[in-house]
Length: 172
Image (cartoon, rainbow, N blue to C red):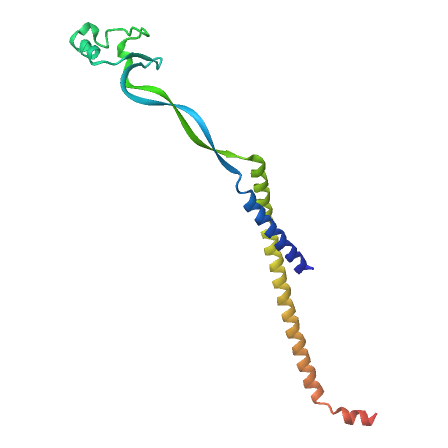
């Protein structure tokens, strides 16, 4: 009975292992179009308060700020947002660029079957180990009993060799 349980557990484990392999492809790659902002070679003034692009950066404007103290960034106001130019930073202009990205998509039904079969495989491995251990223990017990029987037979043989059964039977 234990060997049949072990055999059926091994067969079930084989089937579960095949299912795990079959359902392991629960992830799929999918191309998705998206828009990313990329920096260009042009520079702009960006407001630190609102993060909006205010005015294109030009060396003429920059030099005019340096040459005329009244136009220096810390004193002048931005013509677009009204904040002091001191509250602006110079950065590369960004423009939207359409890109295609590969996104990994999980097929939840297939993932569920994968997880279920993986857990069942782990459970069956435990059963196989338990049944194998039980069979090994039974085989050890059988070997010990067999050894005891052989020992008893040997002792019986010794005892019987001391008797002469022909004489014993004639006396009866």
